[in-house]
Amino acid sequence: MTPEQVIPAALVAVVVILVVAGVVRAASRRRGANEDAFGAGGITKVPIGTTGVARTALAPSGVVYLLGEQWTARSRSGDAIAVGGEVRVVAHDGLTLIVDSEPAGVPAMD
Image 1 (cartoon, one colour):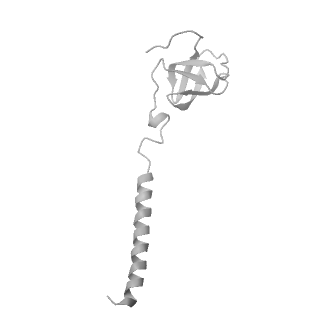
Image 2 (image 1 turned 30 degrees about the vertical axis):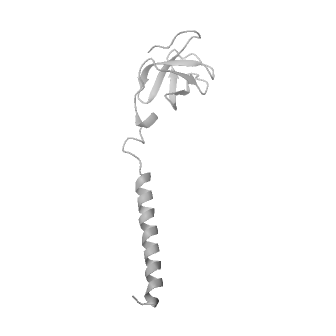
Image 3 (image 1 turned 60 degrees about the vertical axis):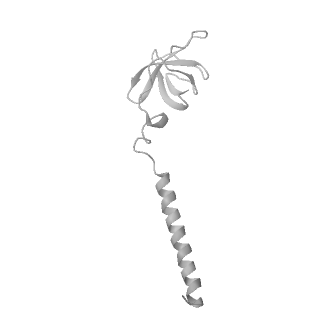
């Protein structure tokens, strides 16, 4: 290889390396098949009895925090649950959790 060919070859090599690195980054960012599903890690059901905290007032619908994620929820009784109130999952309605207010001092079910 002559000195006049070294610089263009090096530039081509750098461009190829950058393109390959970009493709590898894009491929590693690709989401898993179930990651667009509802909930933590793509799960669609929360175990009955799981407890959490109301992030918004449930009057009767709102947002609760449990399993490290925020979930759409609805009060089973229709009664309002204040922000910060503890809730327990009692059922599912599609992708919405049905919850009851958890009275203070009640031990969590394991």
